[in-house]
Image (cartoon, rainbow, N blue to C red; front, side, top):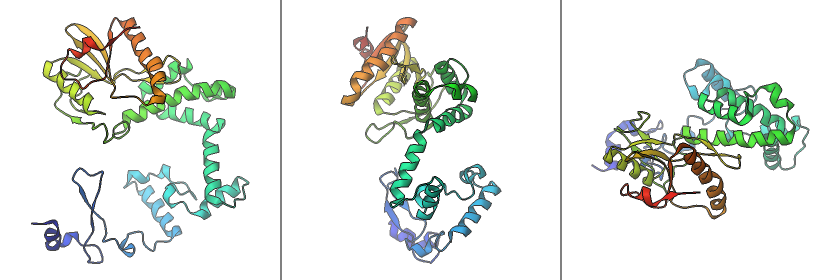
Length: 315
């Protein structure tokens, strides 16, 4: 039975106007095809004809009901449209006027205002504290290490702009690694073909399933599992040698009684290679020397455990 025949025989695939819903190809879909919520006629959209005041009231009531976490009450503020895609020119113009800006090009001036506000030192000081408050313990400990203390409002406000900017860049690096760790997409793309692995038995942290960021990483984990090698994935967060960021090594594994820190690289961006080798790989090598481990930088798809001996880096 073809898709068209199936849709014809099942009225559940009909739009609210009794016309058939659309099927379209989606490059992000593993299945390959997605079914539209409506037939495609704008008048069939659930939002069609809903005026802004009515919609705002509807959204506020939805937030208060707690039925949908996406629209939590904390995310909705009076007079503010949270979705940038629906921000009206009238709303943006009001924001500009509140900031004493009479704009000819509202879109451009609004964009400049937001960019300036985000880079503002006072705003960044608030962001540092708000991020710290909501972060998990492991990331808060990294911030404590960077600052040499638990950051407080009094301490942050006492710093001059230049000193604070130095702390901000390093804390922003913590934000980056946290986003990568908590996202299913960051660092993973079709180009590198990350894989989802399950039924893992030899992870030192007891992790039984995870999603890698590349097929090479997946192949190495499969090799570890096959050879019954104890391994961990993205376990360490090391501060770079220039203290402007963090380095997260891919693996730590113990093979034949020797512990290796392993980094898998398919390639470098030309502008980043020199800095990456010096500050990130350098941090990994220094850490391994202190621990008595070996640091291995791979430029090949792992097929056996012999590559570890041929890819060890020294000073």
